[in-house]
Length: 121
Image (spheres, rainbow, N blue to C red):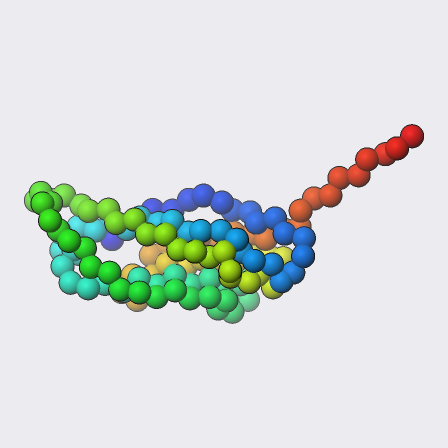
C-alpha cells in the first residue's frame, strides 16, 4: 500500500491555542490483493512531546470493479483538521496508519508570524 503526501510544512500563528486550520488530502494506492476486504484508516495528530491532539479513524473497502490484472487502484481521502487545537509553537506530526501499520508522517512546524516594523522619519 502506498500513501502519497506533500504540501505544507509551516503553519504561521501568533496566538495560542490556535486552530490547525488545514485539510489533509491523501491518496492510498492498493494492489489487487489489498483491494479485498475491509481496511481501517487512522490519522493521528501529535505534538513534539508525543501527546495525541486528535485522531480520526474509519473503515473503507475498495471496489475492484473493472481493474485489469496487475492494475493498482488509487483511493483519495480528505480530512478536516481545521478544528485541531495547537497549544504552542513547535513541530506537529500527522501520522497515517492503515490496518494498524504506519504508512506515512507529515511534519508541520508551527511558527510565529514575522512582524515587520516601519521606521517613520
